[in-house]
Image 1 (spheres, rainbow, N blue to C red):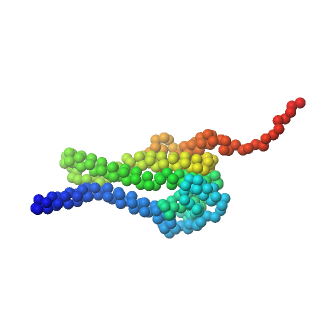
Image 2 (cartoon, protein in one colour):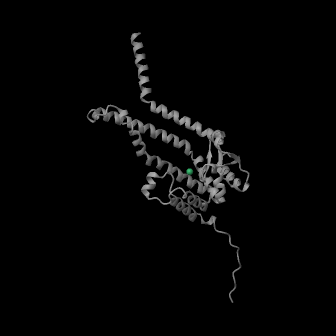
Image 3 (tube, rainbow, N blue to C red):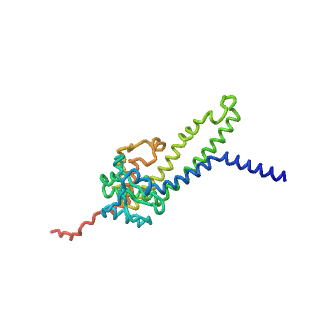
Length: 276
Ligand SMILES: [Zn+2]
């Protein structure tokens, strides 16, 4: 009996130690669940706290957008407008929420300044993020990266401190708690590359869904108001979480060049002139 009790005790102690040593895993899992919940409630319950959201009833705008949504299997019946101009001049849109809270929203800056072609392409891009599950995929990716990264950091630090801590005069992990900041600095290009890849996928999806390459180019030029259009490859690789404006315009024009038949106006047929 004593033996059983001590086994049970050591098991309980062991599981407590395991839980303590893997707190970051529980923390990260809880954070991801919480973020999913926030993503779900944001369009319907959070956004209206700071901005006015109204149903858009201009068929010229909503018609092509809802048609594109229907074609791509997005269960939307309305398009909403948000008065984002209260906070900034940036033109944007999104397909947000999950399940019953899913919403297509355009901001008033995009509606005021964007051409119909640009609006359709921007919406195609946002639908790409939704259909390709970019938000849930990102959350899982960040969870894996953060948990793996911190586990490696913790393991590496413990091993290093056990070996050289005394000679360096460092007593414990808390003495070098600044290291996680270094970790995030090192990780920046990795996280940006992941996000940039998703943005490129959404660009391609948007072009194919909307068939508006000129709208895509107009959008890239508008974004150039606050993003450098033509960074060098190293600068783009490390610091950019979207493809550069130059790359986006190039991609849009390449798409247009391969689909020129969509843009050739039908010339009226004329009878061949007889030459005398
Ligand atoms: Zn995007």
